[in-house]
Image (cartoon, rainbow, N blue to C red):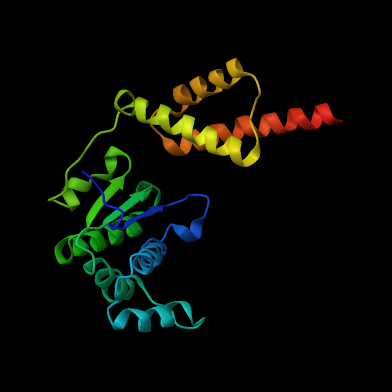
Length: 212
C-alpha cells in the first residue's frame, strides 16, 4: 500500500517502563497531537469544535477529558478531514485487560465511523480478529522480517554515528556489531535499539577508561 505524504500516520507505543502511558487516554492524546500537527502542516481546516476542545484539554489543569470525549470530540473529527489516515499501535499486549478492551472498543468505533486504517502490532495471543471481525492478521516471522531489520539497523547505526560519533573506527568490528544486532534482535525493532544502546554504552566506558 502506497502512503502519500498528505496521509497522516500516527504511531503510539505502550511503554511498560512508563506506567502513565499504559492508558487509553495516553494513546488517544498522542494520536490527537499527531493529527493536529499534520493538519497544520498540510493546512487542513479544523472542524469548529476541535479548537474549543483542544483548549479545554491542554489549557486547563483542572479539566480532565476521558477517552470517550477524546474519541468523539477530537480524534473522530480530525480523522474525518482526511481521505486516508493510519493509526499504528505497538505493545497493546502490555496493557491491563481492562485497558486492552477499552482500546479495542475505541478502534471498533473508529472503524465504523471513519475511513481510518489501523495497524496493531503485538503477540498472537492478542486475538484481535475475534474482537475486530473485519480485521486481517499478518504474521511477521524472523525470516520475513530479517531483510527489513538489517536495512533498519544500517540506517539506525548511520544516524547514531552522525549524531554521537562512530561507535568504532574499525570496519570489521562495525560489521560484527551489525551482524550481532540482526541475529539478536530478530524481527523486533525495539530490541535493536536496546542492544545497540548497550554496545554504545560499552564503547563509551572503554573511551573513558582510555582517557583516564
